[in-house]
Length: 84
Picture 1 (cartoon, rainbow, N blue to C red):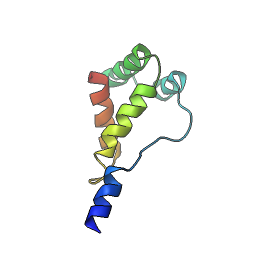
Picture 2: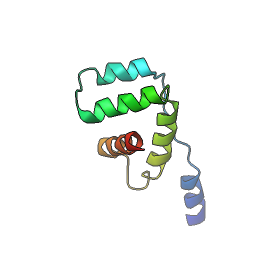
Picture 3: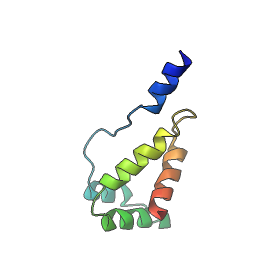
Picture 4: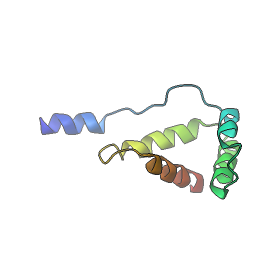
């Protein structure tokens, strides 16, 4: 049973529902004037979209499934993505 659980957890696919675009991200960050928000928006514009962000975020968050994904975890991973 343990091997099956390990296999399933390692092969779990994490995805995001809904449409999100650079314009939508701008809407979410519109009132956030933090350095973090500006850097993330700049990175998304530089990458010409949010596809790379979503893939990187899903990969990183998958590693956090065992301990739990929280708002703090997502914020940390967004910062890691921005700095990469």
